[in-house]
Image (cartoon, rainbow, N blue to C red; front, side, top):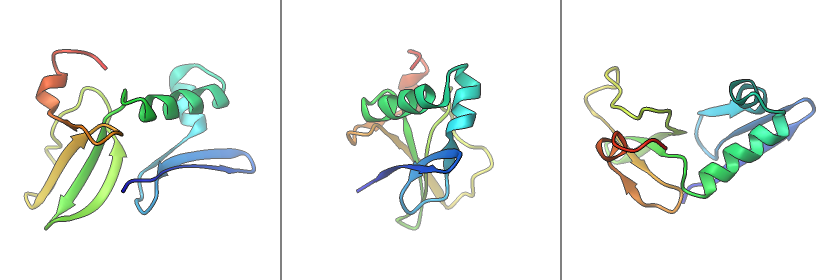
Length: 106
């Protein structure tokens, strides 16, 4: 089971997934979206939980080693090791084929 985290500290908000290193910050989301931090964080969380964001998971030998919100366009990482498999899904668990997403923007 995947747990989304929103951690609010003194002057910062970070967002990621429990047990994995990947994360982003409210200030980064705000700068990219041109929104106040709170609005950008809400937009990010809403998109994730409403299946509008694609979650990538890297596994090696059957063990998940990292999880992150995939950027767009979604494409295979040419730098990943050969023994690593990256799969994509939505928050509700629906598997996603990146080739299908190339036809319709998210």
